[in-house]
Length: 207
Image (tube, rainbow, N blue to C red; front, side, top):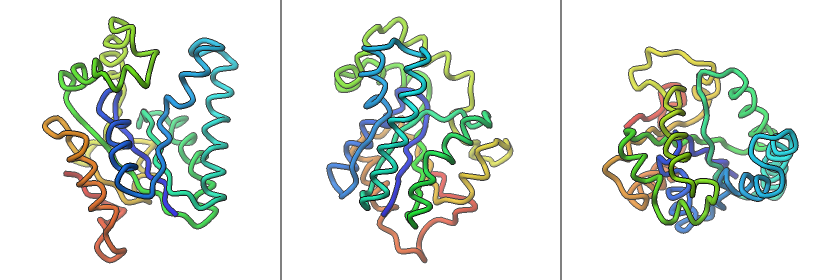
């Protein structure tokens, strides 16, 4: 039983890659907007009930996946410099760890121009109605670049997320010149490795 966290900045392709992996494997996809969109429609983004229920719904889905031995993909934007985000991810994955499951991390990165182009993709806008206000959505992609949403490939920048990331297999992929299917193919090859062939959890595999 495995939980695959797909992390990276907005519009890097997390949902698209997750869909490709799920289509070719036994993983089920639970992307972050599965909870965001219905709650925004009822309560509005960032309101008190939105924040409470968004967190609770995600936690419950992951708990039930762990309880019923479901391999699950979950996508999220993680501010690696924020201790609260690190604590949240620890809490989120706890059911899988307690059930003896494995946690893997697929990190996607791409330059801002690539992400702004992807932000207007048809499949993204179809699945994420809150992104259809393109002026706001493009502004959000740019604004989020103020946070550290990808690891430092040199290893020189320490973050509160390091303790978690160093415990689990990590694959870092630059997706700027790759289609989602190509990223998924690489990720599935990595996920299919035997324990002896996996990348070291201490250093990850940062391609």
